[in-house]
Image 1 (cartoon, helix red, strand yellow):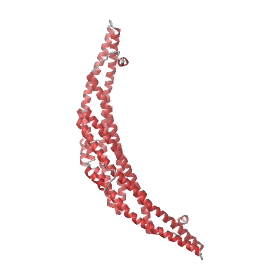
Image 2 (cartoon, chains in turn orange, blue):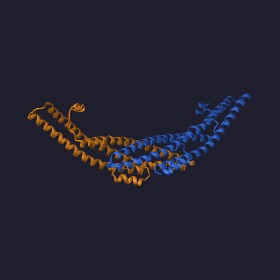
Image 3 (cartoon, helix red, strand yellow):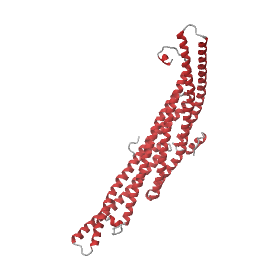
Image 4 (cartoon, helix red, strand yellow):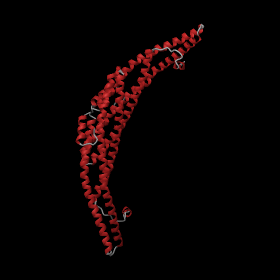
Length: 213
Length: 213
């Protein structure tokens, strides 16, 4: 049936509005996965930098002890690196929370709706195949044939309605989750990079980030 | 001669003060190389994070265009990532300047003094070897033997004095360089991580960081 459709040799049942929403959801899933890849890379790169900053803080502190001629210069660098390390742990907790939530949304919640959509698409192909067969035969179909087509039509319509409902619920859920996560991401990142550790800790508390120090 | 010294079978000429300074310089070179390894790692890790932040800024901006329902949330995240990327370039220029200066100090300037010191150490061993030989023979050394020992003594003393002078000049130079570089490192890092791009740009200008944007 799919082959005949591609060759333009048969008609297909189309729900334009629903198909546009499905295409848009697949695009959203692709783009959110792109964000997830980047934000995961960022978390691991900043994690590595913080590991280095901790070691650098210790090395500066060691040299402060052993270099009376540059004691203060080493000391204030040790202090800066160490305070950045502490704030960095709070930022990383926020980034991991963002990444986990985005992963759940993209690869579980959205994927679950796409599963229903794939069933809907299969049912549509099956229904259209029986319909085309009927049209090709022409004439007087038997009652059994008509009943079979009717059964496939109902199956197709039920899955179409399921898909539409799930898409609507998913839309609301997605906007809610992303609204929260994008705000957390922004607040945590800008608090960290403006040295505002009070705001940083307030952000992770406000969004109930698990594992925040 | 070195073997006999280790076995305690011969005497060695010792300049306690100079040898303590030499040991301390070797320790300083080791520790500065440790700092250099860490600060180079930090520069490359923050460079990678900035690369990711630039891509993340673009991805957020793209989603802002395509998601009217979350346009603002994506937009302010795009803005934050992009402004961090710009400041990050200034920070990286400062870190590279610090790393280059520390590398020159540790592996060229200090190394140059250590070269003279190694010549001094070799001259000391040679002088002591001739001295031991003379003691072992006992009796009446010929004039030629005495003249040879005298020549080695003068060679040793000249290199010892050279080493002492170079150590003193190096000390002053090292304190001057590190004083400047540690201040730059501190000012650039704390300006960047407090989101103070005016102070960050002032720091790289003040220290004439080359290649700063």
